[in-house]
Image 1 (cartoon, helix red, strand yellow):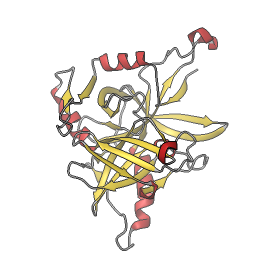
Image 2 (cartoon, one colour):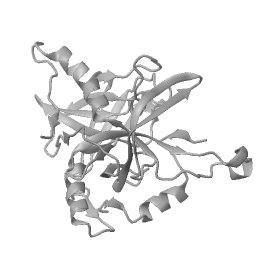
Image 3 (tube, one colour):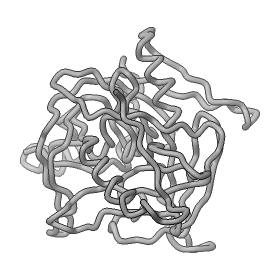
Image 4 (cartoon, helix red, strand yellow):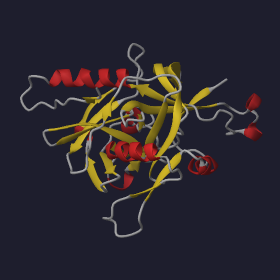
Length: 296
């Protein structure tokens, strides 16, 4: 039976498989000077893939979150987010709720650290910049999304989005690869509408229809983007699937028998989440209202 595992720490062996796969491209961080732009390193000569990656990565960021202050502060691992809008000196980012709220989905971060990888600009903000979180558990409207903002900086590029997905459609996933930095991996849509239901401590924290795809997603990919071959955002990567060892054999604990099964929230889901927030801002003086860029 397949179970869904959240995108956090995984074995190093899995990392080696993912970075050596033919469809994975990594960003190489130059040793010095720190201000030098990141360099794209590809293991493929797919010109279309390069163009998609160059465009998509302008809108993808790395996220770390701290809970507590001072020496007692506990930092999360690095996850991902996508820039979906910019207005009035603000850059708006979508990610997973658990990236911002932590393992329990109820935490309040003391600091949110955002790195725009391609420009090298790092920004720190507090919990006051969080605009909307999904409620968990909430069996009537279960999701895993968070919306927050950071001060706008040159290089912050909102992506366009599309709600068009189909079986076999080529896609590219972009996000942080564990602690190794930003990466992109290609794949195809296995199903544009696969139903999953996830529970934590007996309570449902996510249920609904998601995009099933084969683009590699690993620890740190949570909150990253799934893009089509026009570099339109078509989903937010949320979970991956793996099967347990046969008969729960402790000697094979951790063995992975399901491969290339990633799940992303589709844009109908994401857009509704964002519009529920932006609608409340219309007519408010200096309100935090922005418009997502839909492809035509």
